[in-house]
Image 1 (tube, helix red, strand yellow):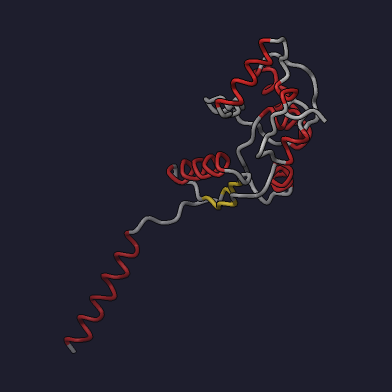
Image 2: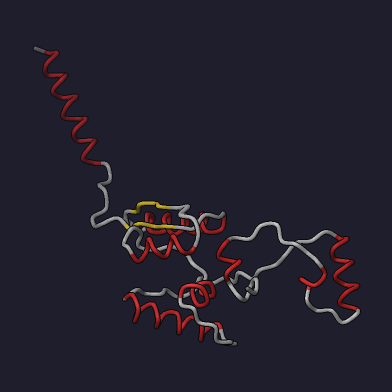
Length: 178
């Protein structure tokens, strides 16, 4: 008889402890996507962690390949958000080739077009800037400086070859003229 009382008490304690643990947050999961490179993976994970920290359940769908795949997943409802470069969307997704000087104008136009075309909200840009740069050997730097000293400003004419370029970059006229 004493055994059953202890067993019953143990069951009640286990159930009570289970009830004390934090319940899953209410509401649907936010499906976070990202493209398939380190910066995007980190940003996707950061967004997921911030949402979870604020009680919002998250499903991670990171590493989705490039812009085309992530954009299609967003439009098809397979993901709810993913980090993206405004300039990539402006040129590659929206196909706008205007020469705009102001980043604020690019953001405003992108936001307006996303709203009108797909009823999607383009969030404010993150407080950082991603400017492309290329690391080169000292020998390449010397060659570039020599050519620049003779009036050559087109680094491609020097004969440099980029070793890691995605399909998206090959199709962007600002990165690699086609």
